[in-house]
Image 1 (cartoon, rainbow, N blue to C red):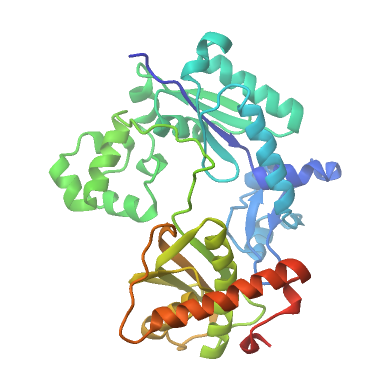
Image 2 (image 1 turned 90 degrees about the vertical axis):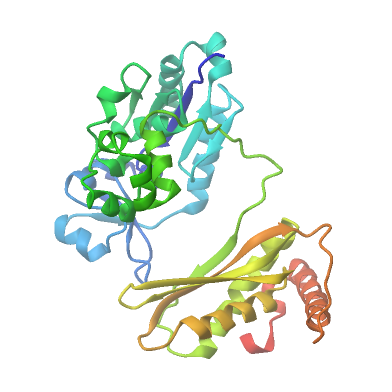
Length: 393
């Protein structure tokens, strides 16, 4: 059985790089793409290399970034433009393989095992892709080349920007075992904190640990991380296909002022649930669970979820279920900066039998669904502004 050749392509400083293509005059300036301060999304979403060298970090608030870099230029995000360039990059990747797995808008895994006879080994393919992207899109990418997905991702992170890193069976121990354990895929801050308590600081450290101990620290995930470090990841590159169904559908919002009352939360949940309901219907899915998310003005977050015996794609039902959960787990001890709701435990709508209950809730849901179908038809024909629920007026 021939060994796999996996690439991980990461578009460098993606939002900032794409935005700068429209602002050539700023190429030599420190630049950050930031959310709107008016809408209270004033954090750094991305920064260019110049800003990075001056200490600007992703996810910090603008005033903190400007303390480090007073001449920082702020650009607003242009998500439609980013999507356009993301699609263009994938079209370049498709010249070399049709086995492509997106990992966010700016990263993809490519399985080029079957392409080696045509284009050469993984390193040659990586350099060809890197130069194609630079020449045609004006962006740079970092590419990791390895025999599995975890090491390919690690490789693309090791050298940036505009670079190719090879991690093979012969060099991986020498190359990665001295790196911090947090560099390993899915080893997040909380995981790293737990491992550090047991003197596990590097990728090499975890390979020396007993499986029983790792299970005590992290459960089965500890053993999986060890397998990753040993180079034993066998997960396939899974192409995005027309058969793809989302595992959850959610929306959140940060309003212009803090939320301090229940009615505003409920109205917000209804508005968000209408968008969720539309997406569920487009994918022919129903939700058997709901998850609510809140963030206070001091950025403390809370999330809670619940499953239900009956599924729904009805926005008002989703909003009410979310509100019931909110009432149980949340309070207004402090104002809320943002709220969100997510439909979870999704299943295909086809073939799901409706189970009647003693209180006729299925009949109420059916009536609500008829109302929503009518609202959707009116909005498609005339626009969203022509019909609203009374509570939203």
